[in-house]
Image 1 (cartoon, helix red, strand yellow):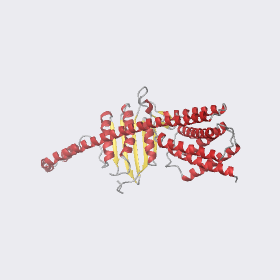
Image 2: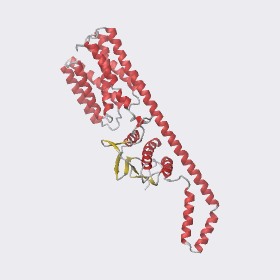
Image 3: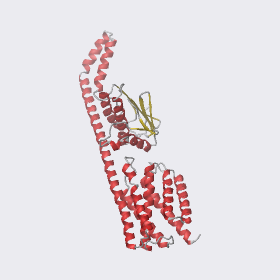
Image 4: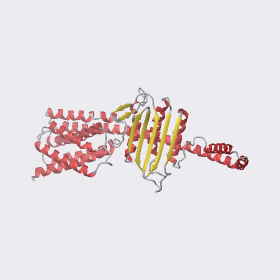
Length: 431
């Protein structure tokens, strides 16, 4: 192998390392298999070396490399628009760094005959650009939130690439102007992505604050329930001798039905206001009781069955996203239906958590392919960009626990079924 081929191979391996770092900033790599990654990057390296050896035109090579990057991104989980943005941004930043090196070292002469210093300079600029992008500019892009502005950002590297090719087409051979323009384009891309990333981070914090507020409200409601229950127990204990005396008298007269009614009234009095479920799991009880209290006020028939261990390895924040979004949607849909029916089932067994929510609905459901879209009326309001965001957030949490979610509608009943693999903190399960 000649020195030139070896240098080109080492250079492409370095570029692949930078691409790997970029893609790991854009996408979650938890479910990506290591063998698949190695094979995909190996194929990419082979294709890049072959096309580089053919020495195609600069624009043709840029389009080919972008297409290869887009195909490489397919092994990661994410939106196609996000994958296209990643490919365009990575390839664009690499092109800007290469152009900067060409103007600094060769006054903008693009003939493909470069020395070792060119490869060193290009790799150095690429590495610095990637580190700055990773450190400051794309920290929150992994979030599965509203990505409209991220999708539109594809025009930024695209327009920047056009500016670079205009410089090349018009044979600009001024080192200072070319270097200044190339560096400015790199800085412009970094600044715009930094601003958008900050906006995304602010939105994520706002969403977390809203969920934390709901969780706090649920705990407060549960505390009130517990306090009212304790007060009722103290009252019952105080009058217990009178109750026992009354039951004894009815028993002496063999009034069985009256005894049953009396005991039933005592049970109702013990249950307390708002204590719809009491599974022992504080995170679930507080949140579900809060939501069921609203459901009982607005719906006709509400059924709920919860059987879970006291300690499950699920963060309270994740419970909030799953149950909060699903039950909010179910209550809202059932409220506008004729039957106003809601059924909630949560149970655990053999390492699996099962959640099923059924509700009646009226009107037509909106579907995009296999996905249901929110039918909430939010056009013209500040919530319009969040249309259908709840179910996407639920899917994100379900995927986090390697679970599955199934949606369906039949005869006016909408059903959500979720299965997640969850462990018990204390090693014991509810049967």
